[in-house]
Length: 620
Image 1 (cartoon, rainbow, N blue to C red):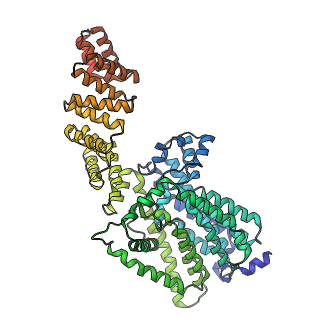
Image 2 (cartoon, rainbow, N blue to C red):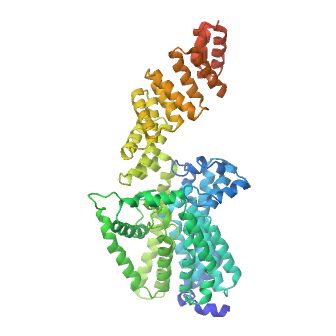
């Protein structure tokens, strides 16, 4: 049986080469030494990514929107496998986040270490896979270098929330490696079983893994198996069943369905869709060779006078040229395998059915690029067979290009990692590299929140204003800008924004709580009282609202009601010094001096400077 499989292997996968290449291929320890050097170089290049922040753009959602991630337990592990996270079914990455939090909390360095670990693992697995496919060290090492140090892969490594890309690729590669063993070692079923096991792990990491059964058929073609034979298809049945099941699971998520039915594509015609699809394919091919002006988000292009940007109308021509070149090279099985690896695995991410709000995404090329890298590696290997002077010069150019590639792209990766250091450069990068479409309101808002956190209120207000311009019906933007106006003592502007907040969202307690404060300081005490009542009716746990209502009642001479509200606020938080100070003021006005002094004393003890002054002045 083994002998029979060997005969089906294409000649180019087993042929030995003469001279130094032949000798080099015999030194297995030396091969692993070179691979180790590549892994160390990659680790150094990505070292500055380990200091990246937990970004307020997808990253933080795993730890704020899903409380079960913060408490690792067997029950919650079951929850990870039965729920969607950030509109994706990805239980294994979510489990890894839960493990991160369990051992190191929200410390980001361990999170980045895990991401980098999967990338380094994938480099090694790519090398092993191509080595098994071609039985050539040089091809495997070239593909490993290209995969390790391509700037398009930065997003999958340096963005914490993109961990699913590295994880699914890891298990996907393991599955393919065992399938190679299955093909090369006599079609023994234990290898096929391991292929299936790691396929399942890949599916539990990301839905993109559903393409594996078709990729297995591509490898069958490469190894000259009879694609119409009964065995070839029967052994794939479990794989296709799992792909269909997980595909249905991925597509039936509520957020995904909303994106499909109400996403960006509703603004485009079928003809527009054709050009958008062509653009997407060309984008990934172009970025393979010219990875410049990279961005974490690529929004759908705005239509001007009913037309897409002119560049989109040329992409079918470029794509046709690519397909023509593929047709011309169809007799080379390595070309067809590489093309299949690329197009099969990238096609799922081309928005034929637009399940996401981005037209393209860099991390989606993480695995598919391996197919194109494979073609480059095999092209170089085929040149080694030729002795012409021109071919020797071409080989030299390829080697030189690989050296330049390693140096230039390593620098590019190191610089690109800085984008993920904090929210401000990350959001700025997105805003600078995209057209001003409504979706970018999110980036402006997130950057505004970052500026707000460092008390740069003018810049925060500017960003929230831009967010409102792009999406004027989003209540959260008015609320955030109003809060910044309040912090800069612009009460009228704050009140106007809180009014707009209520207009678009009159169902949230905190909205009324903030407007109540703004109305109070604008001397609208009746309005402040009304907002406090509405806020408390929705959420009676906000101590600040009881304090505000107590202050309004005090001004309106409802002293009994005011004291009751101050007392309620203190009951909610006994160390709430502002309510203690206010109740002390009220009791002093009612000539209840011992009680007033006691309240001021407690307020001063908890850090209220005004209460300390009152205590010194009136409680001697």
